[in-house]
Image (tube, rainbow, N blue to C red; front, side, top):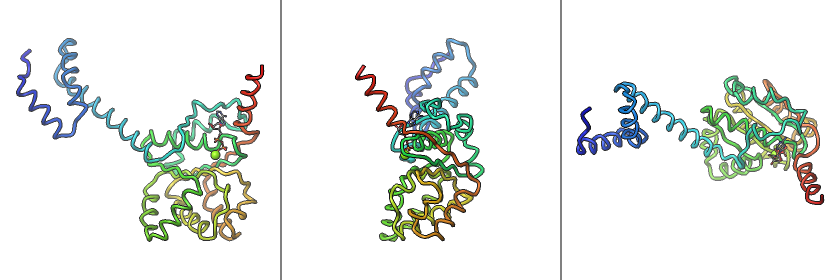
Length: 257
Ligand code: ADP
Ligand code: MG
């Protein structure tokens, strides 16, 4: 077969760069040599290159979505010990990881004591959503409330709200660890009310519903928040003792023996 002249090769690389096809640019020589060896025709060669370019684009986009989600830790369902937490239904978690709840604009609420795997499961499911192409953002509730108050003071609240409005899934971690101020509670309610039936929420909390008033201040606001949040919502209770505590006890036992 006639080979491409060096000059044409330079031109080809130039065109591929101008067309923003970096993977085809990097791989075309290697794949061409392999196709020549395998006696593969031109269209199959082109198909292979296009597939490589697309795969790499999808990988990079998923990486960007993961970065934009700002997860504080990397967690997956694969590293969750379901035997250690029998109150968690593994089949339901795998179902949530398929993310149809996001298409249905449903919410997920994890309720349970500290260390029972709420943030782990929330992060794992939200990471699956990133991989599947959904726009996700993870916030600790205190961090979001601070950001909302700051944005309000700087008159950039609308901008922040429009950013939140573009998300498919918003994770609100640790609702209830710190009571919100009246303004904080109102701004948080506004985010939850705006997300209602538009953006899915995953909320984790250590607070039983009856104690939410302590955090949100007014009964009216708590009622309205719970009403939005729990309508079309999977409520998952992570019962049992803290995994951190169990883990630490097991480790100190191994050390002693
Ligand atoms: P919570 O948010 O309920 O306070 P976390 O999800 O932060 O608890 O869990 C505390 C730590 O223990 C994390 O490092 C988490 O990965 C780990 N962990 C909790 N439950 C499990 C489990 N069942 N299997 C594996 N690791 C777990
Ligand atoms: Mg947590």
